[in-house]
Image (cartoon, rainbow, N blue to C red):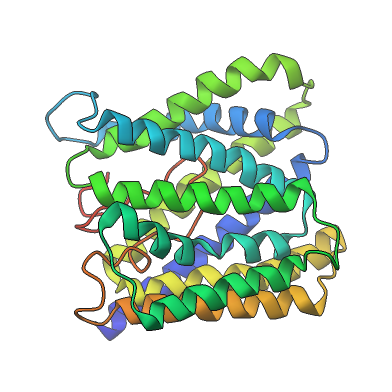
Length: 317
């Protein structure tokens, strides 16, 4: 088990390094294009990769969801998350964006109360309150001007967390192909309808960068699934926070970003709270559903949504 945990952690570190590089490409393209255009073409170019996964799905059945309203709500969440996350990466420093998105374990734990019937005790409640205090440290309302980018990052964290909890709720009943395909189709049609109003012609190299976004999302998703199959969730989940290291490196080398000390202090508080919740849920009799520790801590941006089930990802293609 120790060797499997080590391999799983290393695979997760590689996956999140690829995700961080993916986010750098989004930020670079965000200088010239709207989030609508970037996400539309990345989704379009991701369809062939998703199709290869879908062809491996041997489960019998059709594409009609068994819980249509929950699937619709999750689909809306993923479309919203993609637009908001891509916009936030385009206009905010990488470290700030990650710090806000790292509130997902806290929000997942909160949303699990009404949706999964979870009960939150004193320890996890205190961790959630501390993590939200970390958000205030990062944002410093009144001391620093807040922008639409900050609001977008917060909304992305909320909708991504809601989408993850919904999968925890219906994942046993719905086919993986349904959970994967519906958000991609929604992205294609919804963003395609908006595209004529924001479209800017792209040189071939920028179209290639759109393809890189799709490919990196696909590869990183496969690595994340493999890591969770190989190692315990409590080992793999914290590897998400390695993206702060990449944010510092990429932000400085590529974008000339220098995050202030309060961003790092707030991020540290948020990360510590998330780690505590994940570690707490790894104990028996603390959480029946373990919503935070078994949630893939990456925003589901609709290209290759990270699927989540009560039985892990064993039946994911």
